[in-house]
Amino acid sequence: MRRWLAALLACTIVSPTHAGFVVGEPNVESREMRELAQMLAQERFLEDIAIELDKALVVKPKLTLRLVECDEANAYYDEDTRTIDLCLELLTDLRESFAAAYESEDEVDDAVAGAFVFFLFHEVGHALIDVLELPITGREEDAADQLAAWVMIDADEGN
Image 1 (cartoon, rainbow, N blue to C red):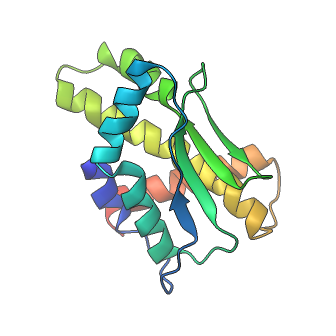
Image 2: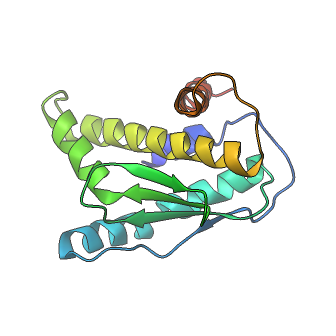
């Protein structure tokens, strides 16, 4: 996951730092998901992304990023609470899906991290459309996908 985070540092939108992105407490019940959330917390996965987002964007009000147990592989943006919930089941589902497609654990880890970050930025897209009242043409789902794709492509090229 660190490789993707390093690539995200190359985002080209630069503005003053502002604590607009915060990390919320994980909402997990099962032991398996608690362990997964603890591992991601030790890696500072969401914290590091929140810091980089703050360096790139000024957002008011605050947007919360958090890991949750959802009983499904998904991610959500709640406009009432301004929270982006990343379901931990998504990580396990992605790992199962990619395991047969790659030869090494490192390749699987990179694929899972990349896909998970894509889902995160898709939801960030929804959040930015909401709080910044961004005008969009077409479907909001398509606009959120386009933002996530642009960030991932731009970060991968190091521009």
